[in-house]
Length: 303
Ligand code: FDA
Image 1 (tube, rainbow, N blue to C red):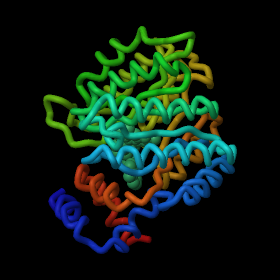
Image 2 (image 1 turned 180 degrees about the vertical axis):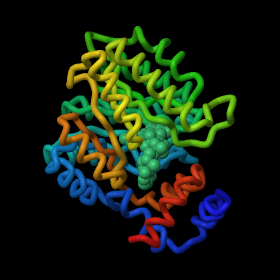
Image 3 (image 1 turned 90 degrees about the vertical axis):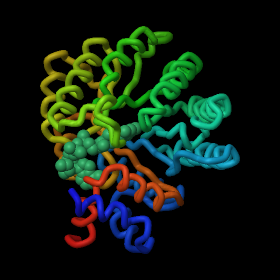
């Protein structure tokens, strides 16, 4: 653990090329063409994608405009090339913590284009300070674009089941609520998030069962084989139809497990991040979650 923390702190000072050795496994590249290449490869394996333009927590609203244009271009390119997939975004890169109204307008424009192209946008969940404003954004946007917007919920948060309860009556025009359920990646204090590994798993399954019972669409986002096996048991128990759930994994993570889930006939979607901001993204992620550093050691020395 101490070694992991040390490595995580050293990362921003390491040469970019060295970090890329680790990052390239998890990031499609810097350009839209890199993202398209990765998406085509995954589509050919029977896997859909959700495309993410890298960037988060901006410090000036001018940056948000640039990111919005990048998303519009990305949606245009991916849909015109008939990629099977949708889009994910982080509201903090559109100014969520600076100007909520400006952030809403950017997301509105992005989702409006996705609607025009018959696609879908998922709002990623960021750290705990973002949960309330992201839920508010989601509620507003779900009213505007009922079948085209979804949200992420994090099983490690103590509040998540209450949040699901409070959102439960938000189905609009017959469109079910659409969530991605993940464990949660940010480092949160114990009064905010469960810390124990098995406790997080237990709450993941509790949330998942609640979603199935309440006929919500779920993207089951995990590489944890235990959770995947338990999810399959719940799918059978509640006879969840194939068009009401999918499994999701991150680009480059546990490809063997991914293939086995696809072979069993479940829908699978891979989160494909690309963009010039990969260095900041990788090093920030690693600082936030030093456990990830052990993956770097493997990537650097056991290639
Ligand atoms: P766990 O971390 O226990 O991993 C299980 C096993 O998978 C590990 O033992 C390891 O073998 C492998 N593994 C996992 N991550 C790996 C990695 N990076 N490199 C190599 N091996 C790895 N979080 C969040 O807070 N907000 C969000 O919006 C999202 N969005 C999101 C989308 C998708 C599609 C996924 C799959 C995940 C997210 N996450 C997220 C991240 C999520 O919260 C969580 O941190 C990671 O998925 C890791 O948790 P697991 O459930 O995979 O279990």
